[in-house]
Length: 416
Ligand code: HGY
Ligand code: MN
Ligand code: MN
Image (cartoon, rainbow, N blue to C red; front, side):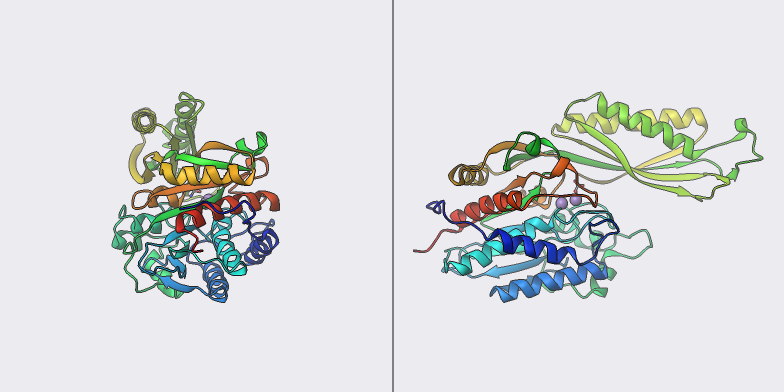
């Protein structure tokens, strides 16, 4: 397919206005968003996205995991569509751009092609993947994982949130469960634009990052059990303090990750303490250990050392401990041809770029299993994300969307 001319660009003001409009749905308390998956706010955001897509002349498909597919016809209806998208759900204290930029940049591509009356041979489909964040329902990238055949649909729909509500019930409740069998769609390619969520691109003055690989992720849920007892009258030697055991395991997690510096990372972001009362020594704690590395053998080493080290700590303290793997995926290498289309687009458009490995997980990491896939990233201020203060510039959004536009259109083929 011939490459588009360098003058083919998106409308940055319109993209920015759409980002700000979407950000009004599920506002956070500090300028960001709390539009968690399968909440009413998620439903509202989906409805707005659908209205915009239909106004752009698309037909909207919806599968049984709530994944949305806005289709712009091509000249050859039999040709496999080129897919582009990301996710509209956010963290509880999320930013306005994580995921949303990738979905709305996909819509902006369709709007720009309409403006210029450009026809492509392959159809183009803009996608919103359900529950990318994995906050309300673990694991992350749940619906794209079902689409890619990684998770069984029944298992995914049985996942419970902290209030015991199931994914399947909540998807029905908000009215976004489609009839389409999940995973039936075949793709020519899949492209995703995402903010970097790290400091590298801004620090190096780059406009875009060409994502060659995504690092692997491991989520282990750890349960430590001791004995609830009075914080005042229980002598120290008699205590079986699950909270103290957890504190020592958190220190161990940090040491394990640092032992594989500079590429490995580790932290615990989710902690439930029982009974979580000011004057009761916790008899039980449940927390999730998040390890990541571009190297699978490093991830496996970190998982193994967590288990032996944490079991040793609990043994010494007379505490019980159990582990459950609740999420994860191996490091991914994206499709060289798709990566090349993005890199050539950045060159053609005159954007400063560098290759980069994604630190965060993305739907593209699963879709890479079923279609040629690649990602492009734009910088974010101070590399901050999963924080309401997440910020990007309109120019960065434009650069990412322009590069995405060129790779998608080149792959879909312009019909003269
Ligand atoms: O966890 C992740 O990397 C993604 O933000 N869900
Ligand atoms: Mn994301
Ligand atoms: Mn995220």
